[in-house]
Image (tube, rainbow, N blue to C red; front, side, top):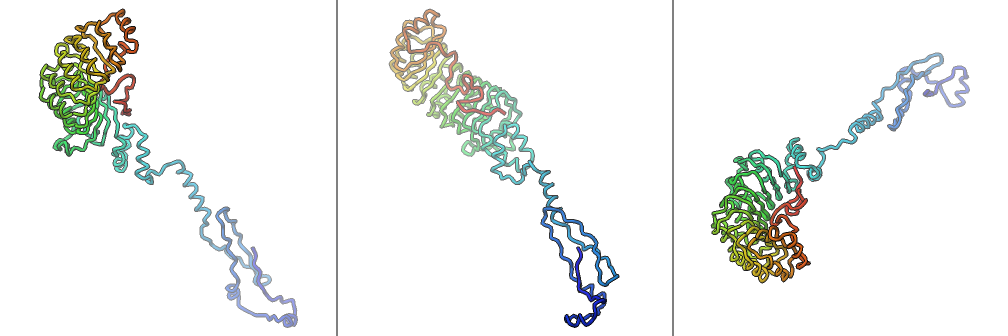
Length: 428
């Protein structure tokens, strides 16, 4: 780009300039150079790179030429923007985890299983603190696992409310001394367990007591096939809101009738109780029957072959007139008198199990048709196939021998192997 300047042409005569009012001014070359206007700078809009500028030739006088050096400019914004775009392209698709709030991070963690969640908690202290939120540890299934000492204690302390430990190997101690839980009373206990399933677990009686001592909020409990003691029953008695208790096939409580009476008196909200095949002696069985809560609806007393009598069944009917389900299978001392007691005293009974009660005359079974709400009847081992067929004809609205096993107070029934008492538990 060439810039024009005014100058005097020596060819034109002087009088013509005088007529135009122009007079020749003789000035040094340095002053002319300073007075020469500066060429305008092209401002780049950032969309396209600037064109390279050429060296310009300036004629101050005829026959004289000078080279003006190019003017230096600052780096254009186009290059910096291009660098920013390349940087953004390289980080495209990556999530800035540092910018996520704790609420969003908690929402992401809620989609992980417990194993992956435990690994994420080892990333940094912030993720560890977010991962300890109680909402992430509400329900846990550790069935069939082997737990190291104190592992269960650290897990329960995170706010677990539903815990399944069926067929789990639990090593002692449950709580480490560093946790400071062994010195707490039941009133100061921070544990929030409400549903606990220890069915067929390999756990010592002292470890069971260690857990139950700090679990006063239990609503449903299953200790099937576990080794317990009279102290265990006393700890269960502290759970005033307990409505379901499964002690089937437990060992170690057969002779402590005082602990049994205390538990029954304190757990006055029980609606489902299973003490089948617990090898209780007569005083302990009498203590259990005579202190049954009146709100009880489901009861399993099977397996007391030479202990459960007609008088004990009469006591059950007097204590619990609202029973819906009753199982007195494998009680060889029961007679037809028990049937009369049930017909007259339990109008709401729907499910009755009399399997292998050999002293009950099969002819009296027809009288059960007088029970208005009876729906199922189990009489395995009493009738032959022909007798069962005849009984079905005589009791058309009653289903005979449809249940092989009792479901009273049991946490897992049927095909729902990942649920306890109707609540689904995610497996670790």
